[in-house]
Length: 215
Image (tube, rainbow, N blue to C red):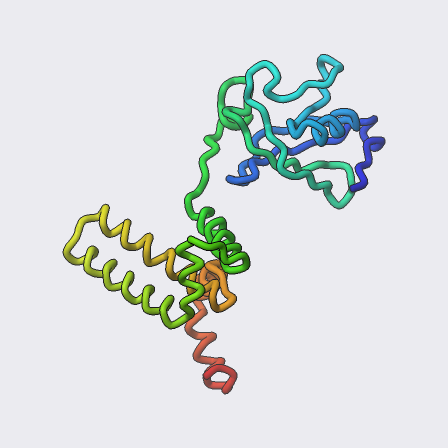
């Protein structure tokens, strides 16, 4: 990775982003020494322009920024640093330097879970329920999706909200397994729903069907 430290007199802006929530946490500056120390220690380190010295975020507060990845922009003069924060990032005690809360959107976990299920499909570790499902094949997986869908409906009509969430979670998990078995992902379903959200979606479908391009 090539970084142009000379354009700004030895410094480059470093945008710090939570690797999980994707929330921007702060902006700092790095020189080459700070960059190298960040790589060596896995703790994000900056160059303080006011104190004229290196400083590692968290060295006094304990709220370290644990390095995950660093990307450089198209001009090689700005860094995007992804990290896992240990506690609040701002020195004023807030999660971000803009006073925002750094909370994970639970929907992002679906991608993480899909990745985990796909990994199970590749590695097929013994003793895993997911491995067992893949070993039994698509018919058994589809059957489980149907069973969980029925249990979800029962809870929706005659059960409690807590039980409904529990059964809906089982349904969604088995759906993710079924998608993985077919070489698909939850993002494919989200993409389809996004298309349908277009106000002209149904009109486009009718036009495609009329043109004979959709069966």
